[in-house]
Image (cartoon, rainbow over all chains, first blue to last red; front, side, top):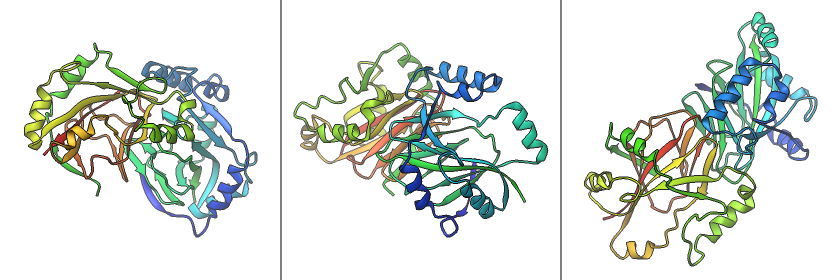
Amino acid sequence: MATYLGNSNEFMNWPELMAILQAIPPRIRGNEQEDDIHIGNAKVEKLIKVWERAGYAKDNAAARWIDYLPGEHFPIEWINKFADWAQCEPAGCWVSAVPPGYIVPWHPDYKMPEQEAEWLAKGPISHYSCYICVPSFGQVSIVDNHAIYNPAQGDVYIWDDWQDWHGGLNMGLETKYMFNFFGWKK
Amino acid sequence: MTVKFVGNFFAGKWDSIIDTLSVEEGERKAFGEEFYKNTDGRFNENINMLVNAGYDKVDTVEWINYYPGKHFDILPVKEFEKFVGMKCARAWISKIRPGKYAPIHQDIDDNIEEYLAQGELFRFSTFISQPHPGGVFIVEDQCFHCEPSGNTYQWSNYMEWHAGGNCGLHDKFMFHFLGIK
């Protein structure tokens, strides 16, 4: 599950980041793209088989979300600023967005095995989620058996485990944005 | 609070009812198919709202309804009438498969005038499948997830805005009841 950590609004100007993101085209992600990023990752290949068995067809537009990367879609300073707030050494971050009708199927965040080993050799990894948009009807994030609904803009949650299973839904009318962060606690 | 817990109904009996639905096709609701009869266009505003949000361009809008006497035995409906002390106006079981949504909507019934003529209407929802992560139901500002099978809630108003979705790995089933007091 995920535990509420606090609100980051006093330190992070999330409306400013939202304005940056909403002015640029995102990267479309989904079950047909996933293996483009994790080619040869046995865990991802198994996950996609699990999705297909559950009914998520490989070419199904249902399993789709969008994301934005630091240094490519928004300035890298955002990861360092959040790391300062969380008192962490940053490992990585991205913003995920789920427009109405898109869906993020149930999954853990796998990395390439070499990268996972490298990260874990440095110490336990913490996984933070920050809700950066104003909440709107139908936007749900789930970590394990914990559904997070209507969090305030700037609310931050820390996960029990960085690779907890999770998913996202948007049954409403506005796109949902989340800032996702991996780091090592100082 | 918009929705209140009224108890656990038919615990232990829903798994068998769900098993019998596995051989029924049910009635699929999706874009391009019939949402409601909508004979006089009363659902048009809701449909236009979903189209404007882009739901007609994704393959995620779908739910499947099963009706008592047609797809499953009427017994749970009769027992539910006793459970809540009301007469049934309409009851059904809904299924949402992984990767599918019943996006934000109100239940706009073509026969609502006929029901209202018989008395005040109350709406109940029962979570009937075993709890699995990813199956979600929202009524106004309340989000339900991983509810035990049989848990039953009464809405404060039968016309509340609501939605259901499933980002998990198992079908999600719910029993819905519109009662007349």
